[in-house]
Amino acid sequence: MASLQNKATRLSFWRVAVRPKYVAGLLLALLAASAFAWLGQWQLERSFTKDQTVEEIQQTVTVETMLDQKNIYIVEGRVQDQKQVFWLIANSKDKSGKSLTLALGQSDSLLKVEAVRFELQNAAIAQAFMPTIGSWLPTEAPEKVDADKPYLLKSVSIAQLLNLYSPDKPLASYNDFLVVKGFAANYSLKLADISAVLHPAPAINWLSAFYAAEWVLFAGFAVFLWGRTVKDALDAERLN
Amino acid sequence: MSTTPELAKSLQIYKVTSYVTGLFLLLISVLYALRLTISSDLWIAGPEGLVALAQFSVDPGTGERVGFPTQGFSFTTISLIVHGWLYVAYLYADFRLWTQLRWGIGKFLIIAAGGVVPFLSFFTERYFAKVAEGWNQKSEAK
Image (cartoon, rainbow over all chains, first blue to last red):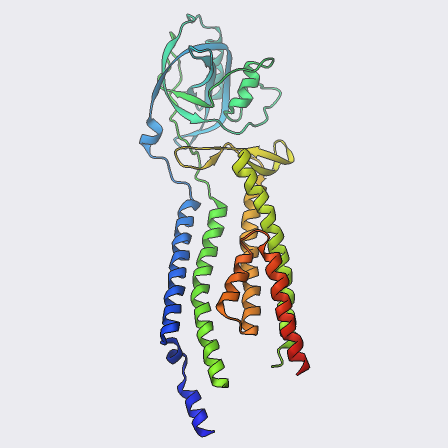
């Protein structure tokens, strides 16, 4: 009886833990934990959208376009240099007849943009294809327009714009719109250039953020589980 | 071993979490299939109504899904998050049962897999609940 008690007290947690079987188990648990931690880190990086580098945004293209003076609109709620600005946008077509929406220029005064819009609608511009330099931005989600100012839009949605350009028949179009640099289609625009920023505000990817927390939890749990198996083995041996 | 009421409680928690997690896993499998096949998320309270499909496009530069409505939220994303935490609860239930029955690590891992492999949790629940109940009755008879 006495010797049994002795043996039991000598069997400490660490004596069981250093056995090859449990050392191998610990290595496996640590491997799993570091894999989980790595996944957590990766997920965390994905949680916050990265700012676009200037090079990515500034890639410019040149497209031959002809301005559609009947379809000129204003987009409100844009941000540039931490200021609320209004964009002047217009429909155009390329040489294949495809519709291409151009973001022409901006100002922080709605009155000014409205005046330029009116001017451009009535300007005598030769109907010719002009090289237009700009960079692409992706279409946005449509948003409802107030009935009293139907030309004042709240986002640049190609689908919504196509309905305005051509309400009766479908129109072939580019999926993106072109932010024009120095618009000069036989007409000098009295507006400043738009700086093309892909993501107006950094967004949080909530799925990634929550998954990251879970991976950390799993990593801790993997090691805890190993400890539990050692303790179980210890208890079993103490009983016998 | 007089752990019977405790074991009964663990079994109950295990059964409930296993069904809830299993059903949610089927739900997110369907929603994820929609994402992959028709590039759409199930959208709640968006401009097109309380429940609608919102189509997105993938930005080739960043790989992000873009073009979602600005109002409302993605039910697909919420479901994925909820399933993730239901799975944590399911693992807790798995751990409770596993500890009390002094099972080997293999059984723990098989039950854990049930929460991420569609339909598997229904089979593991049937099998392991039976094994655990058998054990419970044996200890009651003693």
